[in-house]
Image (tube, rainbow, N blue to C red; front, side, top):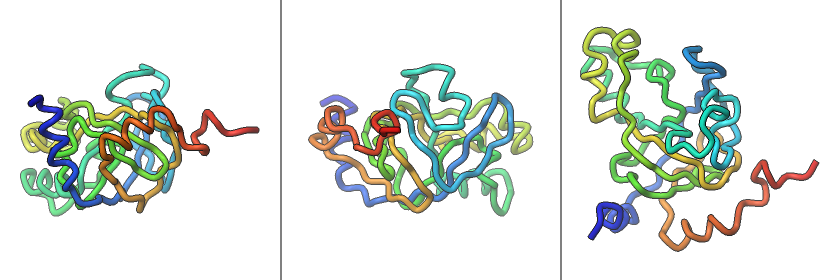
Length: 184
């Protein structure tokens, strides 16, 4: 049994998560901008994020972290709380074990994403969080994802793990509101 199959076997039992925060960076090294909603663009990234135009088809179109991971990082750093923008991830979800999402497809609002890899902390976390910031994030950096099907995502949307059948169907039946299919 492959690692992908092992994750898929247990991902089906995950509860729904909730999208709590959305952030984009208009340019490299710019501050994150917090949004209520945005368009996920298939094969590109989030509308308004600088990565969207950099590397089409990349496995790191969107970064995802959980509120639970952020709380763990805060504890390791000695903070009461951490603003998600400091961690430079695009999406914050809660109520779901992110590590169990690896290699899985899931739906957020109208969009379908696929978790591709762990999102390891970069050296900038030493500046953002202080000495020990990178060490505090090890194992809690979240996931990198690619967008399989575009669509609107909004704070409060549920994160739903897709069965293999639904994930395969999404490749052939894009949502009618996906940006590339809209008229006008």
